[in-house]
Image (cartoon, rainbow, N blue to C red; front, side):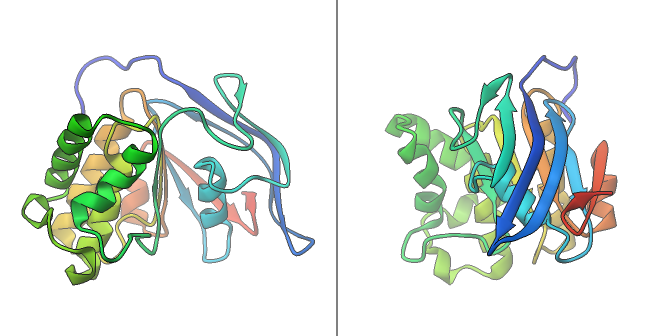
Length: 217
């Protein structure tokens, strides 16, 4: 964990948020506030809506109705700050190396090449993959691919970081490494939300919210 006083950071608010799929409400209505410096864990059984809520929180899915604000600014339709998203299925691009995958979101934001190179090196080192930077991701193990996904999401200091089952497929040592990284990223000024069914993951963070059938219980 990072030492020292917490810095006032952003606040993300969801109000009356609902998601409908094929005419059926599958998420919400939800009211939720996420504060910088207080990493949040979403728990709940399979099908409870954790992944959908992660996508909404990351700006990757637009809710059917409701308001999403970041420090009072509407974020429905897209964020105006860097966002990192860790997906259950990695979401990596085969044919690209580990460092090329990590670089993609930063390239889309127009980050200068020199900064991208530095952020890629730092992010891959933080998950223990510095020596695998130039290896195509399809040649990596499932756990290594998961760690590349974590590196991609955390690289470049995103303001909002959302992680859906980030410790899946990881051995105990790398699981502990990723949990420590996410805890450290979230302790000062970033907005961090982690979805997990694992009680040990929930125990590593200061705030836990349980979902059931698309609602906060």
